[in-house]
Structure formats: C-alpha cells, structure tokens
Amino acid sequence: MTRIMVINPNTTEAMTEVIGRCAQAAVGAGTVVEAATPAMGPASIESHYDEALAVPGLLAEIARGEVEGAQGYVIACFGDPGLDAARELATGPVVGIAEAAMRTATYLGRGFSVVTTLGRTAGRARDLAEHYGVGRACLAVRACEIPVLELESPGATAAITEECRRAVVEDGADAVVLGCAGMAELCAKISAEIGVPVVDGVAAAARTVESLVALGLSTGSRGEFARPPAKPYTGLLSGFQIR
Image 1 (cartoon, rainbow, N blue to C red):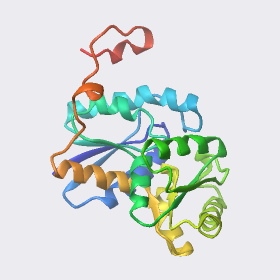
Image 2 (image 1 turned 30 degrees about the vertical axis):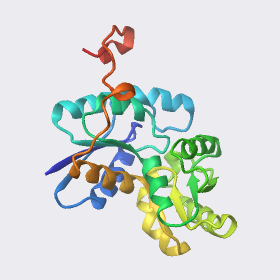
Image 3 (image 1 turned 60 degrees about the vertical axis):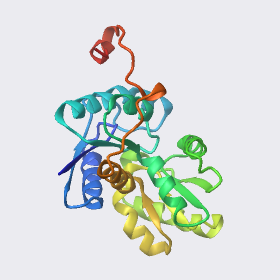
Image 4 (image 1 turned 180 degrees about the vertical axis):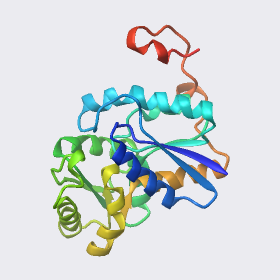
C-alpha cells in the first residue's frame, strides 16, 4: 500500500476536501491519499505575501508526514509554495501541481495556456513555466478574475470555461492547464465542452508522485537538497528548528 500526503497550503477545509477527492480518483487502488490542511496560514493564496506565510504551515505538515510514514507528497497550490524547502525535509518525492500540470501539458501538443484565478498571479505562473523549462510551450496565462474563495459561486464555472475556450480559439492552445487547485473538479466537464485536453495539476501531481514511489525514486540528497543544517530558530519559528 502506497501512502501519499496531498497538502492544501491554505486553511480552507472545503477546498482540501475537493483536492483530496480529485487526488484519490487519479491514483490506483493500492494508493491511499491523505488530504491535509495546515493548522496555520492564509485562507487562500493570491499574493506573494500569502504564499510566504503559507510555507510554515505546509512544512509542518511535511514534518508530520515524515513521522507518520508518508511516502510522497503533493503541494496543492498552483504557485508551488515551499517546494524546494519541502524537498529538503522529505525522504520521499515532493511534486507541486504547477510543475506537474505544465509538464503533463507538454506531452499533449505543441502549446498550452494556463487559466488561473486573478490576474495578479499570472506573473508567478509565467515565472514557473520558465523555471520548469516549459516557457516556450506556455502560450498564455489567462485570468478569469474570480477569487479563489469564490470558485464555487454562481457563474464561476461558466466564466472559467469561457476563458478556457478563448485559450483554444485565440491562443491556439492544444491543451489547457487549470491554474488553481480549487478548479480540480472542473477538469472533465470543461474538456468535454471545449474539445481539447484540460489538465488538473492535482491529479497530475498525485499520479506523478505515485509513479515515483513505485519506481523507488526520490529527490537527490546531495548539495542543495541535503537536509538543512541545524541551527537555532527563535520566536514563533522556534518549533521549526532542525535537530
């Protein structure tokens, strides 16, 4: 039995439930997904400030997973917050949903577009595409201007679908990447309506982690991704000291 922890870096339990369902549906019968919500952090992640303050709670969940025997981890936020730090702590593989979704989309055609929530997050998505080496394939990053916590509001799904349709017509996208973990359950519906593959990063990352665990592979532990050196941490961060 393989055990994967899927961490929603924000503190909205309803979103964690959606993420957990989508991750569990994507993996095989022999894999158990634990969807985790940090004890501290922002209700949603829509800025660099939010992202920075989400990382301590995320890392606390990684530390818990290490104690409880998790074999791999998914970071279920499209900014992939804390990914490198999580890879330093975890003995198993750690995959962010933006990296998994973008890499998956490159297998499906020459170019993809990302449809995300707010325009202010588009630059981060562009930076990640370049960082992951898929910048040339990323044709556009489109925002539907719907806040994360309003993704289930009336009309939200229609607006997201329409932006995905524009990505196909105006960008020439062969595939569309949904740029928020809170959109995970919309994947199949939107794909059926717009006629091109739509990639949900939660499913892609969960399946990737499952495959890496099955292959016995994890992050290399030399150099940059070796365990962080022990040193004092003070104040609110004293509990994060490496021992």
